Length: 244
Image (cartoon, rainbow, N blue to C red; front, side, top):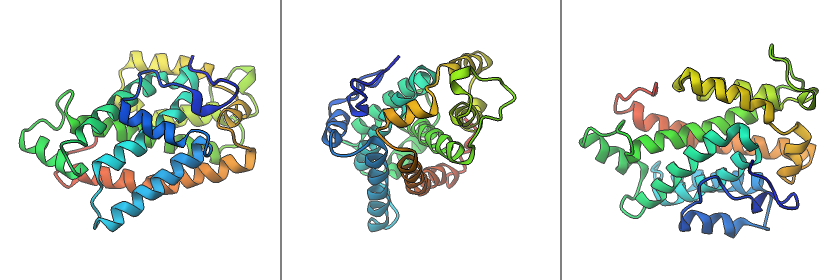
């Protein structure tokens, strides 16, 4: 399990090492603020940059911002390792692509022209996977804030009773990722949910308090929403469905 040294979230390493550029972004934030604050601020900056560029989203700052989210996946431990491994690999690819492409729109244009949007390993496919990662964290936070007590039909282990994390994670996964996963993966993820930290442990790992974690989760939700919507529209505007 990915852990934290001395309860310092920023010291945790992702399952797959971030590329040098992404690691530099994460390192620049280390010790300056909590992970949630860093991520929320980065997405707010990204949204402001998109507005300043006339609605275009630049690939380089997008990749740097998404690199920060890997720490949030790490805080959830083994239950979301499947997502963390895939997410980090896709972010690394997009950061590399930022050396050749200026905007997210540019990579969609190129892959659409080559009929490779959904091709394994294409930048567009990797963008789609990163978007799912951002949406998974957003949905998890939304459920975390909305559900005070566990009310799932599944009976969680004793250390998860009386908190919302198990229910929040199960619902978020079901909404965002489960529709695209095989039965075997869904089964494995379901079993992994029982290894989630408690609500209190998660707050501690994120270096937050009960009140501050709610504030910062809302900031991420609000800041990431227009970015997620923008990415979805890049595909939909080209008549590419989102069911993959």
